[in-house]
Length: 112
Length: 113
Image (cartoon, rainbow over all chains, first blue to last red; front, top):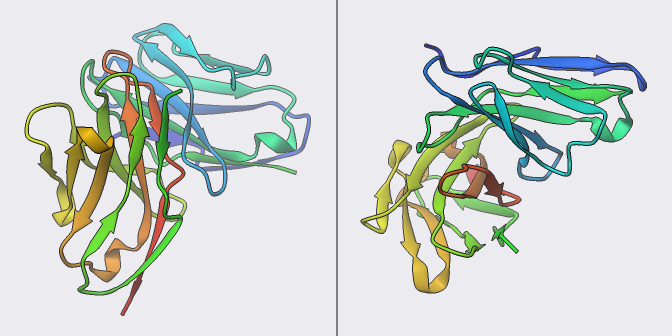
């Protein structure tokens, strides 16, 4: 297992377009997290899943954002009608219950 | 409110010098504590963690951190810095049971040859 994998690594999109990111967690991990990191800041929690259930969503996750983990394995994060303020690094992490989270390399989104 | 403070935005040290990065937290109970390192354009790598027990924890790459409950601190130390340690360092607290991490704003480390 090579760790948490995120795709794509970079995405440039025009304002108003929809984008979708994928995260493949470490295979035995039942918890999966999404964070957003803007320039000069630490990561901010967006949401997390235990298996396929989305157990918590931050108020940062507006109605334009949706995350899924349909079979309790990989997860997708979709942003609809992107805005320039959505430009950030989107980080995915996974963990076993009760243990530390391991992060992927992130997807850097640039909205032009 | 739960928060993590890293008071030093930038730190510059000479290669071979010792290093201490500060982290203070505000939390209702004893949280889980972490230090992560991030190289430019990359994700986060876990350096070390504290859950309970011995308050001095050892991590990878020669780093260690000490949990001081009375000071609500979890400072990161390294006795001799290498040029490859130049990166951004994040302190984080986690809620036992949920693992929703709260991160500090990071400390960018520059190492002079």
